Length: 112
Length: 117
Image (cartoon, rainbow over all chains, first blue to last red; front, side):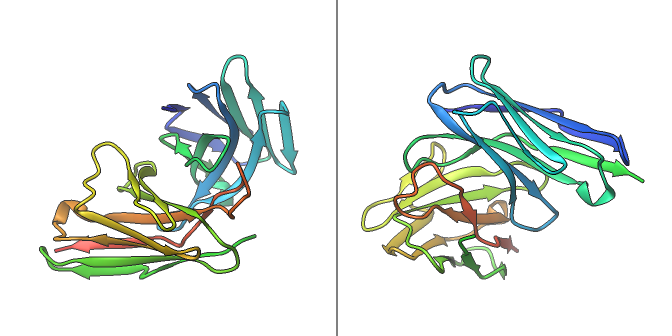
């Protein structure tokens, strides 16, 4: 089955700096890669996703890149703000109605 | 986006009792729902896949007789934690995709925090 590895587990950045979180996956059949932001005690919120037919996607300060050959994808947050502080999870799934497999999460702290 | 509603949001029970958690897709039909469990400071771990009208598929290490899943309609799946013990205390989250959406966005319920005394 799919295995998703996520690094780093914790990340502290100064406000205004960029943050990068990286994930790798094992199943070459995976073709959907979402990123979720989770605040304490809340449900995960989708912030951006990418499918295997594109290499990059951007939404304002958030971007995701995908390298299918290397089986890794990354989340980039620019101009970080204190409200970006949360736990971020990457995930992967293959086609059809298959569940998402999550990485272990990255606790991002943005220091004002 | 689509809405998934989960109840109760918090439940405290005594050891040995059973607790039922409901997961509803409010504005779409879901032939499949997924149940995840999240322990403090850990990731979401898939427990089981709930299939409408058929038996659920459980992940390795998850006891099907302890975590009973029923998916009797296209909008409702329930998870019953039977004979709960303190080690079952966790955050349980359901999720669903719209039927026929293929590999689309997964919508999450609000989550249910179970505390077993």
